[in-house]
Image (tube, rainbow, N blue to C red; front, side):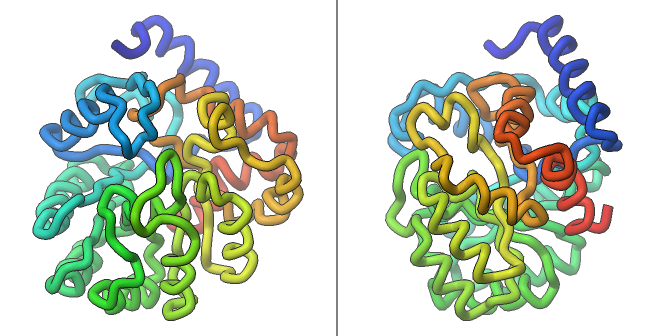
Length: 299
């Protein structure tokens, strides 16, 4: 499964041509998945089975390789910094995942130290511990975790993250399949309490694209990532409304490149091509593919 090595080499050349053509020093991808191998294998099994959380879609994993090879491939693409998006689906899991991610960041200097959280009694304690250990970005997966982000148990943690200015990449849209607490409503309640929270809405909030653009226009610390949005795969079942393109262009300083690597059913290059064909221009592409994240993370 996955791309043959020769095809990957050709793709790496094309990816590099993309960002060198923009005059960039590389790419920064805020939505890539590295996690304990036992967990990742279960995630891949779920995709292989076309489970309900992915809408029953056929979803072949393009980059199904070992951890070291996956990290090396991102470097070959010219990705200067990436994340290890981890997420719990039950209580008692987040702290363990955070320990793994801290170790991964220590042995992978170009990975932005990632952490996660879940509504449970000790969440404030381990979020503080993760911040003190140097976590630079958090992941909150509302769909898989099936929790309300406005749960009172999480409020102190959101407060800590807002105060620290640490971004939280959040899968809160209802795509590719809705969850119990997905959609703009729950995170709107979070932002009303913590307006300074640097919430990064994953997947551009698909399919509630325009509702999440509304939120971004209201809260100047909110951002959106491009993960899987605008690609042929996603446009086939949750298309981005063309009427919203001017708003997307206007928010160009708060859109971040995300890919979902390695768990994507097409080549990495296609995400970049999908962004280019939006027609928002080279300045927008430079900001989205590198400069916005460089400013956010001080890179």
